[in-house]
Image (tube, rainbow, N blue to C red; front, top):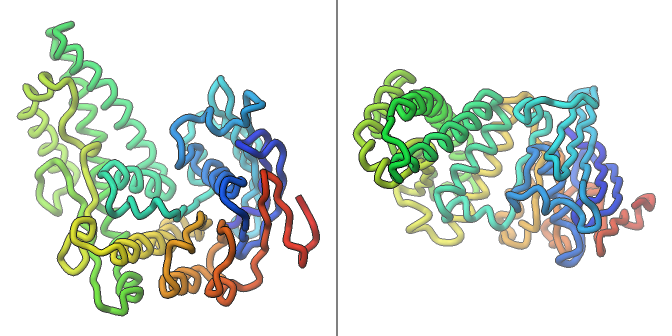
Length: 378
């Protein structure tokens, strides 16, 4: 998979920008607050129809405008497909091959990306919500059914919480509708749990050899999906549904008192174990970085297995956060394999030695120029 071109109109600090990319490594150099991260963010948004930096689409729009458009062309095998997203006060519109998509779940997955940024260390040591979001975003790109199910689960959960709040405030005594919402939550939630378990097992299989190599065979990585519902490890869908329903039934009084759903996939977590220790609690910063690196590199191969195409890799100022050894493992792993976009103040000696013929851009105050050795462009 390759992003051949990108066009931004009134996107953050870019009023009007058009770029063509190399199928290999594209590097954006510049000082902080010049627009490098905005550019990588726009590629991420083009893929997932949402930002990793903000929950408000309004933040993506240039302060001089009321709307923004991100468009690009993706190449799979020998065919090219145009994608576009338009954001305004009326919402967002997504188009594939110039045809508007009625559901975002039909759009997401056209362009697959993996982002690695310094804040991805939070994947290991941050809050459980960070790891749930990681699973949902990454697996959602690979599996449209999972993306649909998690979207449905969130909708039902919102409705159920709202009704529990009404019961808490004694605005109603009728629990029949709560039973209906509970049945819906159980049905979709069990699908989400089972799919997440499968994803975590596959991710572990891909990450273990990478982690062992980066740690010089001194460490073994294990991933544990921690669910708030106590069922057998290899339970099937019907068993998970039965256990989920029974758990909610036992928690009914507590839920009404709190006005919220207390168990379910929205409370689950992902644990990283290195040599039998929780790396978030007992691991050094080096071990945490090795774990995050192994997970990100594993995603590349896993996404290729699931979709038949290698994803695009976005490295946002991450090289400066890795020592020479981890930089080497990262750059050798992606060399001549995936299209990569890198932002950095400057390229380290390691990077310059390992990256083959990169296309280098310089970013300054929202203006992008191609390095002098290439034909000049903006």
